[in-house]
Length: 286
Image (cartoon, rainbow, N blue to C red):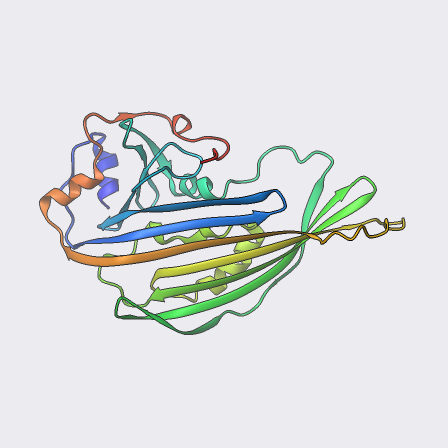
């Protein structure tokens, strides 16, 4: 791993390039949510370079969610968040990167206790997918449903959720294409139990994911145990819909050369800081 060699050296000098090709492609990931509170959308687009199993994703504009960083270097276990504009970098684990997109639950829930129930994941469907830049793909489609039940004084809220995901993957990509950046967990903003139940079905898809669409719908209902429900007010149930996508284009590979390893080294001008200096508890509005 290029990144492992860099971390071991403790300096920003570039290590010798490993044998194998340099792979590049354009990666676009987006998330759009429509809820009773309005519409919110985010899109990330940038060039990815993969060398020796380590990936570098440079955004063209903007930053990753909940951070000031616009570049991410990712190896097997750790990497760097980099703010190219300010020449600042922070060490980051794979879990840190995923938490930018799907933050873990934190804090005391107080009197509003919630539980997941009625979880069902249907067997995934595998079939031939549309071609990708002249290469055949395999498509996997999977659906899941569950409820989130929240107990409140005098009533019970039930959020009924449904997920549909479609994933296209190139079974035989160019050598050196696969990297930890292909972890799709950040595209599934669902409770941990749901993601764990989906994992065996998602693992049936082999290869390099080039097109992914994850759609979730949530509908809020309220029960009044032991008492009569109030009369309907004519309003439709509250619904939230989220669509998350991943799209790859311009996949190319060529033999690596000596200067390629410098892409995965921090420049001498880059200051190393704690990750808390680059990340934010909540995503800022754009």
